[in-house]
Image 1 (tube, rainbow, N blue to C red):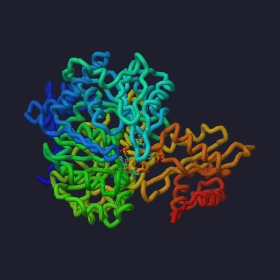
Image 2 (cartoon, rainbow, N blue to C red):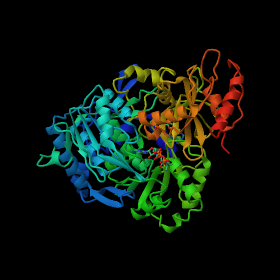
Image 3 (tube, rainbow, N blue to C red):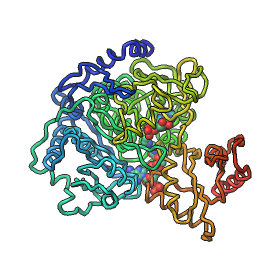
Image 4 (cartoon, rainbow, N blue to C red):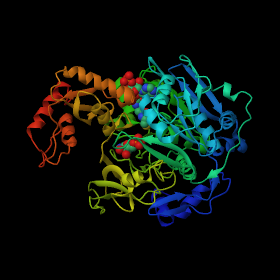
Length: 630
Ligand code: COA
Ligand code: AMP
């Protein structure tokens, strides 16, 4: 069956489609049906089932006789080490850590925050929580203590599992002081922490609160898998919204298992036993779905890579890992290839390696620019598939279903909607528009299995953020169009979320930090185009009247402030001082116009602008920090 037949088959009988996909999961109690309606456009999937995620990701492969198969390859060009963990080892390691957590009182439904670098223990920690039915929330290592504190206060975890440090090229990032700072800052205090000590920065432990990863597991009785209801939250993952308060995306257990397992063959075209590599980080959704859960549930070998596309040691790292570990499908963000291309434009390092095992390359996380796709295709000779999804969905909304049928690639399009997603382009009034017309991208409800049923402790925010603008639809926050062949094009965000090196960040969150500076009266942050990272944040500051300090000094201070409050991952390095911000007569800051000026693109002066002369001031201020580029 080709893509169209599969998609139409889903559309004509979604219940049968998902019940059939569910057969690939080992249930403690099989679901009697797929979709459960809570009413008022709220849905659950496989809610009457009982199942355990860790069982499906580890134990079942051992029981099926594949215990000796490699589950995880850790490859760290930063430390120069490599290690392999079989499914049997993964099962015993998760059972042991889960036993230790259980003995310290962690039970089903408790939250556990995980703050770890790219080591296999991060996956073991996630799976150990799943084994107990505890709900993990992984926090990306590039976030600062304050961001971690916000998540502690929202998730209210019983425990935190952390690494003592992360390793960035040429720099050790001590995680433990960040964790201590976050616990001090947060109102909610976890009962205990488990610290995975690693060279070169072992952490001081607080007596009675912090426990060593190895010590806590000594002589422990391994924990069995605890079956949970199908709609039990598997994890919470915080992502950027329009304000500084991140949204806690809830991932439901059963739908997550079914959808990810389905995606591994149908989208990524791998069979059990194949090696799959997502070069991302466990702190992001790509890391959750495709470093940890998807490949392991499906019985693939996954790679935990601690390094960067360039500089660890060079732009040949990706090719070395792909050839050495015989990667069949490779997934990363376009930014990574832009970095490789910049350092090795002729692919000289690539030609040193045998890429014959590689079937295809998948890109997501940000817009894949045609140049990058064409360069990657030309250098590798492999198909390059863009695909579009979000933290909220947890798996592909639109992609090229290579395991069903590889559709022709159209540059600039992530291809077509996956089964489960009825994607439509709507005008402002919520009416579907004609093919080729720009509009808001919305998905007709219900969303498929694995997608978010709600936000953690924030059902109202869930409704307002996603369900209210277009009744009966999920609002994606992206704008774009669908062409005559059903190919989707993602053009821009409709909110203040920007995408920096494939990392989703809130300009509103950065503005909150800037506004907290004592000399700043008003501010705006916009995302300007960047050749490497896709977008970069730029801040505009209006200072308090009477402030006679050096503007450069204040700019340097706000840059430091964002690094301290949000973290280095925000990549906030550019700010300038202006007298006023351009606004409409009703007081709305004209961010889109400012972006056009910074990008050197033609723009129309908005009819509602309060004082057009301000645009010249913005242009001059941008020149002082080197914009527009080139
Ligand atoms: N812990 C602590 N700090 C971290 C971190 C982590 N886990 N990850 C990143 N940082 C820091 C970096 O050290 C850097 O700090 P600096 O300002 O002191 O240099 C900052 O956060 C920005 O990091 P990064 O976005 O990685 O930028 P970079 O300039 O170091 O590297 C790329 C540029 C393109 C090589 C890099 O962004 C990359 O590999 N991108 C791939 C994108 C990706 O995997 N996205 C995931 C979604 S699929
Ligand atoms: P995240 O939740 O971090 O995965 O970010 C999701 C957002 O990243 C989407 O809403 C898009 O704005 C953007 N995005 C992800 N994948 C793509 C893609 N393939 N093309 C264009 N934008 C993308």
